[in-house]
Image 1 (cartoon, rainbow, N blue to C red):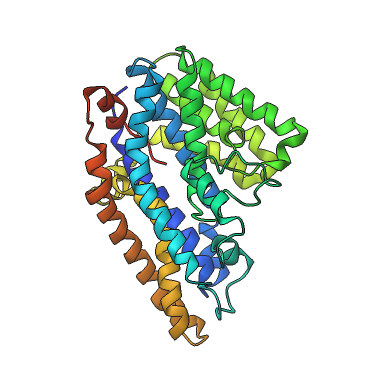
Image 2: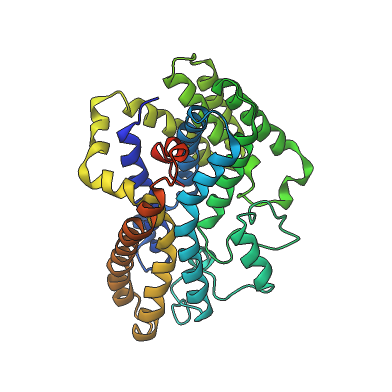
Length: 351
């Protein structure tokens, strides 16, 4: 399956959307202006579908060899993740950036933790091993978002890599239907409430949709694609109409690959944002914390002044850090040390 440049542009759009969704609840921007950006979870679901589309065919081209595939994934993800995680822990230790920002509501305070969690060592080890998404809530509460909020989806991605890497070679459409079934079973099991949204079965329908899309692009038949599309809609419906519309948005993404209007995703700006989308997705929250720590001390309780400076400053800082991480860390580590890793890294997916 050839590389689809328009998906790179989509990565950039989604990363910027998530960044704005994290930033706006910390400001005094009117609710009507911020409300279009309150669907960050839906954007991450589309990232999951993208991973299902790209990663499984990469593994298939690689011969379904698990250990080399996971080593290549580690080279791609962990260097940037480790640096951003360390920075996020250090910034969180400096104190609550929202102290004195009385206009920030519950949504903003849910996004940005005020302090490091109890049992810090356990949280650090969970994040380093990327298992924070598989730990039940009663065991280590909110482990999936305590140290670096965006990392919860990286844990979910890692679970997907392990599952798909250990799967026996078989048709992608069949794998998609198995993942969809996993999502359906999880929603009726009584212990589902004990896990967070970072647990793989919760996101399985969207990974399934990506796998089915890959099968469709390869000409293996479209039946699994339509089953996964409408199945994901049905499984997401209990979480609200907005969540149920996300699979339909993915349908538009696939349509954009063939329609003239989808060429906007090939613009140089969106292609570059797509290239830095992974570090941008991870670093946007620590960048916002750093700016809020500084501005919160000088804003003197003035929401308008804080908001006017915070939005451009935090956005600019996140973009600069993401560009540096991409150039200085991500790209060097993406150069395969051995020929076997190039097949996996070259057709990469966003996280």
